[in-house]
Image (cartoon, rainbow, N blue to C red; front, side, top):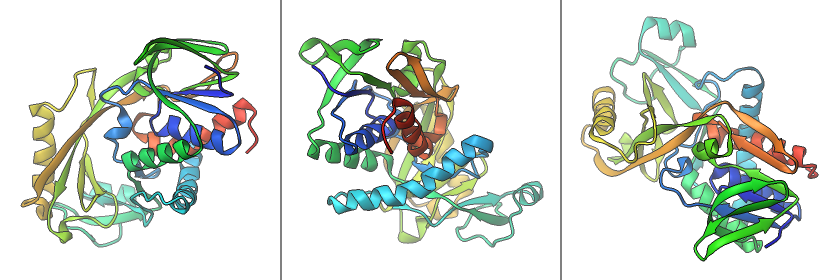
Length: 316
């Protein structure tokens, strides 16, 4: 099996990199292990560089994402692929006088928050990560880009080896990208899993916020006509959502947001954030890695893709 580029990992970063490589005419092989706990499937998709406290080069990288996503979604829409998103800003609710001063919050509350004093709205928004991934994979399929479910076990210059549904496999390419999220430690990269848990609730129309909203230790944002409530942050590989995580989420939603008191449970989400050192660069001849994005994978994916293409010598 041979291609001009192999992308290992079909989360947002891997799928977006494969999409941009394919648009530039390269043949691409996309590999994904289909592991439970992949971050993209549980992610909020928050585009909030300022509330996340990003600065310097990382802030500039994040701002590129705010410019890129409306263009990408319009491109996908032209192919008949719709993705839920909003770009009207992200809000931070000040709960204390100190927060009010620190955030320079001067706006009145636009969504009821117990203990909320004032709000500040920053540039930003959100995009639905699962729907975006699905749209990118559909677009790639329309461009004759194979997606194989396979566990990559060995990567070396020009070749990846592993095991797929039909047994052992080997594939060759001059360019190889590792976009393997929390599992990057298997390839010697300094990344660890940081599990996040979230709820999706359904209530009356007034229960849905118009834009992402940070308040205290958590946040809300619109999700498929309901409300995404996040998120815990827990070290280790323990799978699923346990009682402790569920209790934290339910207590946070109930105690902080009166509009959600009668909201119904739709689903619970969980995934492993790739925490540790943000690294986008070359790890061997013809092999690059894009790992360590933590809770900002969706936000930083456009910059990451742009940087990878530059490093691979692919024309913009």
